[in-house]
Amino acid sequence: MTHLKLETNSVSPISQAIYDSSKKALGFVPNMYTKMGQNPALLDSYIYAYNSFRANSGFNPIEQEIVFLSVAYENSCEYCMAAHSFIADAMSKVPTEITDAIRDGKQIPDAKLAALSKLTRSLTVSRGNVSQDEIDAFLAAGFTENHVLGIIAGIAVKTMSNYSNHITHPEIDSAFEGRVWKK
Image (cartoon, rainbow, N blue to C red; front, side, top):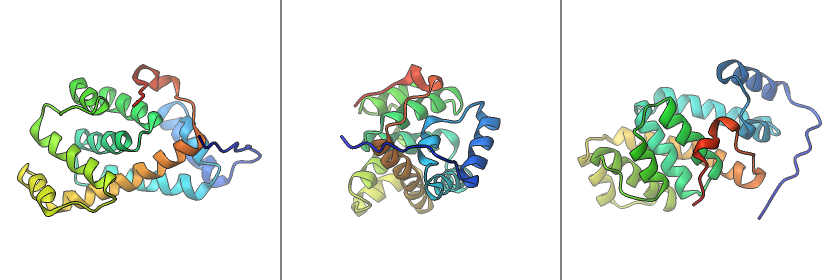
């Protein structure tokens, strides 16, 4: 298992501004941010892409969490599965049976959300190389071609955090402890 030691000598002004903003908005700075913030380009890129996905992907908050959880599941990111399970349940109002189905690798009980998760997972695993049949099934579930591109944006966001977490192993924040996950 890889692990960076990341000795915190000084915090860049870019990372500090993100920490301050996070503390104000959330009441704490997620441990993932303190690890990513060792390189301000990584944290700044992540925050920008995360906020843009939330604002511009074309997905509602429930669908956004389905994308994030599906990517984190396929990338086996324990930190993001815990964090986004908490966010999904507590903030985005995703029914727990849906988050639990994703966490357990089982079928989601809602057909449209199942199609979203399925294509997200397939795009993640295949690195974007999916069949036309997979795209057609997704479109038949009620999504648009624009949503396919939105999924790609979500995969990019979560891939940054998932890969960073695999290398830096941030401790699960106490806010997320009730949704700890192991694949």
